[in-house]
Length: 471
Ligand SMILES: *[C@@H]1O[C@H](CO)[C@@H](O)[C@H](O)[C@H]1NC(C)=O
Ligand SMILES: *[C@@H]1O[C@H](CO)[C@@H](O)[C@H](O)[C@H]1NC(C)=O
Ligand SMILES: *[C@@H]1O[C@H](CO)[C@@H](O)[C@H](O)[C@H]1NC(C)=O
Ligand SMILES: *[C@@H]1O[C@H](CO)[C@@H](O)[C@H](O)[C@H]1NC(C)=O
Ligand SMILES: *[C@@H]1O[C@H](CO)[C@@H](O)[C@H](O)[C@H]1NC(C)=O
Ligand SMILES: CC(=O)N[C@H]1CO[C@H](CO)[C@@H](O)[C@@H]1O
Image (cartoon, rainbow, N blue to C red; front, side, top):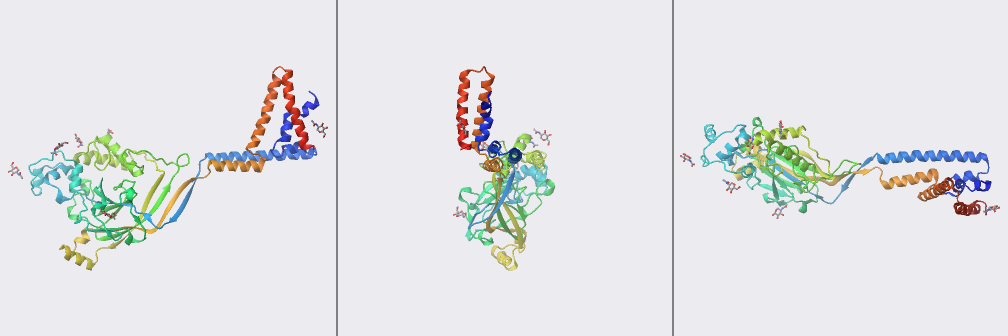
C-alpha cells in the first residue's frame, strides 16, 4: 500500500464530501487543536441527537392523547329523543280476572287461581270460566299497560304546535309500555330558540289509583313518570337511567348536549362493534343485548323488554329466574363487555320544579272535567324539555403526537444537531457500500481487474475532492 492509496481511503473521501456538518471540518482543520475541538463538538452533537431521537420515539410509542374541549354556539340544535314511562306496568282497571290470575306470580309473588281471587275480593267478570290461552306477557302489557291516549295525555305541545300520541313511538322497557317523542333519526325536530317555551311540554295523568305493583312483591313503590332524554340512536334503558317526576308538579328539564369523539387503540379504548339487534353501536344497546344473553342462557326465555329471538318469559319465570339474573347483571356479578363507542352524543339534564296546578287553574280544570279538587295534585305530571342555551360542548380525544409530527420533530433535531436530511442517509449508504465493496475485494483473491475497477472511482473522487476544497 502506497501512501497515495492511504490518502484516498473512503473514510477521508466521505468525511470530506458529506453534507453532514462538521466531519469535513475535521479533515480540513488548520491545526490539531481545532481538529480535537471539532471531534468533541461532533461527539457531543451526536449524543444529543441520539438522546432526543430516543426520547421522541418513546413519546410517540407511549400513545399519549390530549383532550380538546370546545363550546360551539349555533342557531339551532337537533332535539333529543324523550322517552316517558309510567312507574306501573299494568293498570288495575284494565286487567281481567284471568289475566290477574296469570300475572299473580309477578304481582303478588304467588300463583293465585280465579276462585282464590274471587275469595279475596276481586269482582267477577266474563273471563271467570276461561283460560289464558296462548297470549304472551308482552300482549298483556301492551293492552293493559300505560297508554297516552288523549284522555291520559290531554296536553302536548312542541313549541306552539299541538302533538298527540301519534308523535310518540311505543317501546317495551322494564317499566312496561314507554313512549318516545322525536325518535325518528332521519326527521329530527330542531330547537331554534332557547328557553322552555320552545321545546316540548306535556301533561300526563298517571292514574295513581290504577297502580298494581308493590315494593314487597319486588315491584315499584313510587308514583310518577320516569323520563329519559337520549340520542335517537340509543335505545332507552329506563331502570338505570333517567329522572323521576312526581305528580303535582311541573318539572322544567333543561338539556345540554355533549358530543364525544374518542380514539381507537392504541391511543384510546373506543370500539364500534356490530350489534345484533341495533343498527348503531351504543353502550345502552350493548348492555341490553348482554342482559338478554345472560337471561336467555340461564332461564331459556327472554323478557319482553329485552331484544332477542328466544320465546318470551311467562310471569312465573319473570318473577323468579329473570329477576335474579338481572340483579346479578346490574350488580356486576355477571359481566358485560361493552366498550366505549368512538363517537357518542350525551344529554345532561338539570331539573327544577314548580308546584302544579295553582288554585285558579285547579278550579278551572275541576269544573271542566268534573273531577275531584285534589285529583290533579295526586295524578297530574307536567314537564317541559328544552335547551337552556343553543350551544353544545364537543370533547375530542386527539393524538399527542402523530406520524407527521414525529417526522418533523426528528427532522428538526437532525438539522439542529447533525445537519442531516434524508438525502444524507443516501451518502452514508453510498460510503458503506464502497467500504463493503472494498472489504469484499480485499478478502477475496486480489484480481487485477477488480483493483482496476476499484481504482477508477477513487481517482475520480480524489479529483473531485481537489476541485472542491483546494480550488
Ligand atoms: C261459569 O260457569 C258456571 C258453572 O260452570 C256458570 O254457572 C256460569 O254462568 C259461567 N259464567 C260465565 C260468565 O260464563
Ligand atoms: C294460539 O296460537 C296459534 C298460532 O300461534 C293460533 O293459531 C291460535 O289461534 C292461538 N290461540 C289462541 C287461543 O290465541
Ligand atoms: C305529529 O304528527 C302529525 C301527524 O303525523 C304531524 O303532522 C305533525 O307534524 C307531528 N308533530 C310533530 C311536532 O312532530
Ligand atoms: C343460573 O344461575 C344460577 C344461580 O343464580 C346458577 O347456579 C346456574 O348455574 C345458572 N345456570 C346457567 C345455565 O347459567
Ligand atoms: C490536486 O491538487 C494538487 C495541488 O493543487 C495537484 O498537485 C494535484 O495534481 C491534484 N490532484 C488531482 C488528482 O487533480
Ligand atoms: C321458574 C319457572 O317458572 N320456570 C318456567 C319457565 O318457563 C318454562 C316454559 O315456559 C317452564 O317450563 C318453567 O317451569
